[in-house]
Amino acid sequence: MTILKTNCRDSSHSQIAAIELDDYTIAMQTYFLSDLHLKREEPQIIEAFLQFLMGPAANADQVYVLGDLFEYWVGDDAVRHIGVEPVLAAMRELSQTIPCFFIAGNRDFLVRQGFSEASGFTILPDETVIDLYGTPTLILHGDSLCTDDIKHQQFRTNFVTNKLVCDLLLGQPLKERLKLAEQARGQSQSNSKDMDMTIMDVSHNAVLKAFKQHSVKQMIHGHTHRQATHAYDLDMGQTTRFVLGDWHTSSSILTATADGIRIDNQPIEH
Ligand SMILES: [Mn+2]
Picture 1 (cartoon, rainbow, N blue to C red):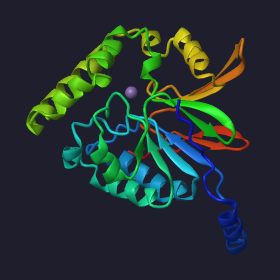
Picture 2: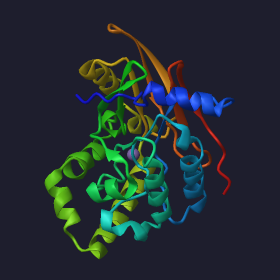
Picture 3: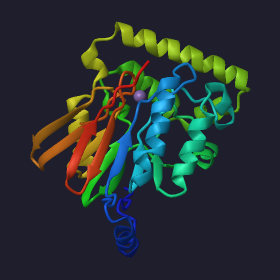
């Protein structure tokens, strides 16, 4: 289990800032987002993310991206093929002053050290427990909870979590990798069309298991694109599962403070 401190600014620094900035409130908030599915063809979503990085994120304690930031990722050497160079530059700029973290999703599971260096975001394993203002919190992309989606679980076993296969994929020429990514996207879209919507959501049992296994009362994830706050009354007490939305018609940003958690949406003009 990994425990990270969220409140890493030292108090003396905050105090100096409080005196100098006078009317400004000192940032004590951490942001979480996922499922932006960034790609060249949707510049408005890229722009909305850039606005976030240069705006609110610049005053955060920490920023966490919980997967599927990119529509697909075929290797750290292929950034220009998906047209996200400005995104990586802005992420890097932010990471110079704010600790930034990334958990890969099922679309961008091939991110590696090259991405981490280019973006300045530290890659964390899926299912990491962080200390969020005193509350141990499980953070994950979320597809590991969708255990009723057998096809997706097979894809996870055969590709996403299979290091050997990932290394083999990354060793292919770029042209081949782009072709494979295109096929995978087509496959995933046709699967989603035929499938019962409940199968694609998280499994209740998998959620309960995750709370127990990690001994946490709070979790944050994305993947299902079903923004919501779910409360559970379990043997271990009250637990809460926060689900991030996607960034299609509006953004979805979870803000955590010492006082609680909320999810906000801003429309994205297309
Ligand atoms: Mn996903």
